[in-house]
Structure formats: structure tokens, C-alpha cells
Image 1 (spheres, rainbow, N blue to C red):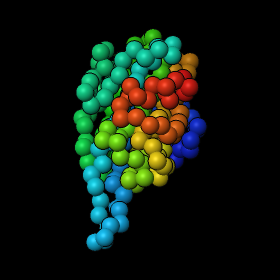
Image 2 (cartoon, rainbow, N blue to C red):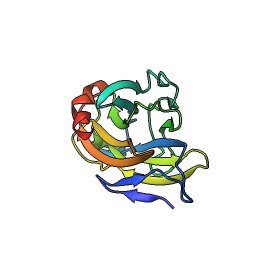
Image 3 (cartoon, rainbow, N blue to C red):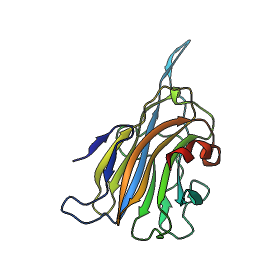
Length: 192
């Protein structure tokens, strides 16, 4: 049973029967919102990009995104760039896999972002979500709906961070502007 998360809500990444999760997938899905035109409704393709920034003591040390698909240590992997979206409320358009057991001990937070590389705003997006899935069995653990609408081009979605010997996920859902993860760094830092 999946938890529908709200902004600021945190959940522990533990298995239902106890023990920590070992591999999770942060999935991202979206659809282009129909636009009214002179000749009726139509949609444009929307290219959203998921990124994961790995931090050690509030300092960025690595990033996984469409141009760098695997972290230097191999613990975080992007499944590839989707240039159009379209899944919406179903499966994932883009996904980032995290092998929690392989994440180096000095990495204490992984922040997940989404941005519109082509500069389209979230006013042109609908049914956008991020979700975390137990990759060992495919079970969705939590889902966070990315509030659509705003005149912004990016969102700081969520973070996975160490708590004691385990991990926790926190839904952030903060709007931002930028075409790449580098543009989003000033918006990410207050969430560390």
C-alpha cells in the first residue's frame, strides 16, 4: 500500500516486516496539458528531466542526470532521458535507481529535482508525480503529486537522507526556475 505524501512529509525507508530497503527507484511521470487554440485543444511535447544530486555534509559531490547517467561510485543510475513524457498517472517516464547499500558512507543526502530543459513552465504540465518504489519487488512505497500550474520551470521534488543507520524520504515540492540542476543549486541548498 502506497503512501500519498504531502509537502514536507517524511517516511522511513524500511521494509514492512522490518529491515532497511536496499534498492529504490525514484520515478517521475508527467503529461502535457492540453492548450486551447483557435482550432480546439492540442498538446505540445514536454521534456522534463529528472536529476539526483549527491551531497556529503551539505556539499555537492556528484550528480546523475541525462548527460551523466551513473554516479562515479555506481550506486545511483538514471534509466535514460524521455523527451516527451506522457505516462502521467501510470508508470514512470524517467527513473533514477539508488542502491542504498552501495551509496558511500560520506554521502548523507540525495536530492531529486525535475526541470524543463526547454524552458516550458509547469502551467503546460499535468498529472506530474514522483514516486519511490522498492526495486527488489516493484512495490510502490510512496507517491508525491507535483502540483501543476505555476509559472516555474523546475521543482525540488524530494530528498533521501540518512537517519541513524537507515534512510528516510522527505517530499519537498518546492518550485524553482532553471533549465538544469546547476541552475537549481541555490534553491536546493536551503533543503539540506
